[in-house]
Length: 332
Image 1 (cartoon, rainbow, N blue to C red):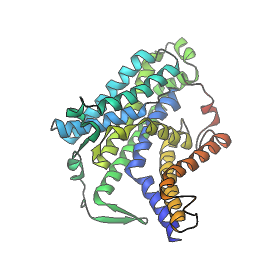
Image 2 (tube, rainbow, N blue to C red):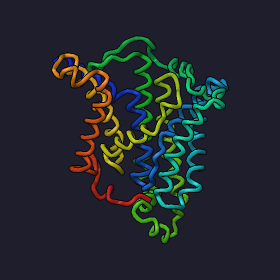
Image 3 (cartoon, one colour):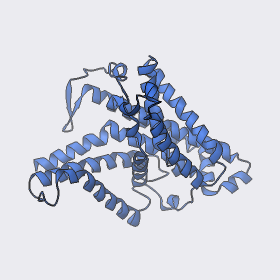
Image 4 (tube, helix red, strand yellow):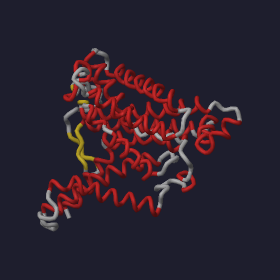
């Protein structure tokens, strides 16, 4: 029984921590891209990498204040979105998908290369840039706090508070934009861009604006993740993170304001709960060591999550809050 309770509390802490915030912000950005505008972006991890290395390089290498480093990462995300959008947004959706997934992998390899090591730290990455942020915590950095059965240090609690404020502000921004004339245009583009163009709307410009907005939100997620880890490494921003963010979006419901928020928190809860639960079953002998070793748990939890996701797509493809009509639309 105690192992079950520990698995729940561990899952709850994961659902509220900086890793969940990271995937939620990636998913909120993808919701702007795919859910509302119909853009197939398979390289959202690249925007997270821009946000993370913006603050790391700015603070460690250039000696800038951490908030200037955050702005540097957001500016890099804007530049990346424009460079991606210029050659692809006039073409079919699959071209954007190919370019974004390739760009994310290219940037990861470039950032970890030998000749980029003087700036990015190469495979070792950069660290020691979050001290200014942690120092702003209104309570002790190392003091422990018990909340809902979970234990947080002062630094963890401060980061979670700031991160969830960022999630709330980004979600409210998306909510307000999608109820504005701008939001109605991008949703019209998702449904039929030829019809939107026939009404005199500059489809290319609206797509570019959407790509930039979603990319900046993803960069904020990368910044929160870097501040939580206290270090950055290019290999932390692989394309697998993009697909997990899509999982969170699908789970919560595309084109729904709170879908990626609930989906991201639920996804991290399930991952941590499955990990703790399987390890407890293995260590207590309920599942024999010959069938489930501790090294197999990390792989098996994703197998179970994958099976659950397939069941979700079969029985409720619109997700928890979604509308089936939203996922029937073709991406542009």
